[in-house]
Length: 375
Image (cartoon, rainbow, N blue to C red; front, side, top):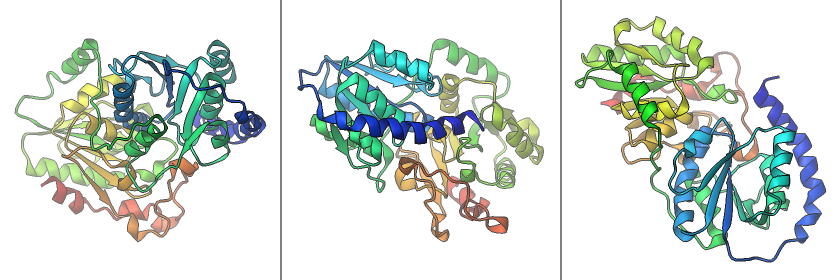
């Protein structure tokens, strides 16, 4: 069992039991005081973390003098790097000793805790121990540990749904764009040196993210489609360069795609070679970014890059690349199960179809559909 599956298994069963045991204690809530210390919780998804940033900006506008901290993990903490609306980034491991240590050190320390996790029980348990006023989503047993709940609206963009969590604090905002992500001068220098001899100022740079999170591989457009698309792009534009992005686990996938590309001198493969923060600057080098529904897609959109998102198991309405330059391609309407991925319900299944219909919603996105949008 992978680390991700172990965490989800423990959270589902042990976490639910702890929520049940603690739920009667919700009645014992400290009286509200002046809001001086605020904690935001977002423990997991990189894409979801990017989508929390507009809400955090609006929270700071409402409480300019408050101490606002974010609780994250090693996986996603760099999304909040040098964010001017946050006073502190706290990173924990999702194991019992790290979580208990955080409980004991910060018991009822925060006047308000805003839990931006959509499904995990552990975030509600953390909220219960460290916060007086606790805001979270109203679904599942975890909701019994909050003092204020908000309905999860899955008919709108998730960045807006995160912003809705601020309503109990009398903050009503409309989100229509993301916030840029920060990186260090060393991150910039690393990427500039990596690309120095490989691209010129006249090149048209296309970023490609062909992978997806380990929990939802059904979101991936077929590798042969990526190869065919890239061959068409290279054929039609002489000064084009293609940059692949991905983690260590996606190297094999990307190598298979590159194997079928004719002009390999046009290809730059950064998979497994750069950090998350370095990716923030790398995406800024791109004139266009093409991605499955995954973290790098939201990163490119946040950096205000023209982005094409490829959707099937989930809805663009919820997770489209959010900037005015970007579009989504969605063929999920041909599938009776779409959206089969509902993160807020803990539903992240593999495709329900087997055989030739496996990933039918993603396979139905033709190379010509993407080429048309690029043109």
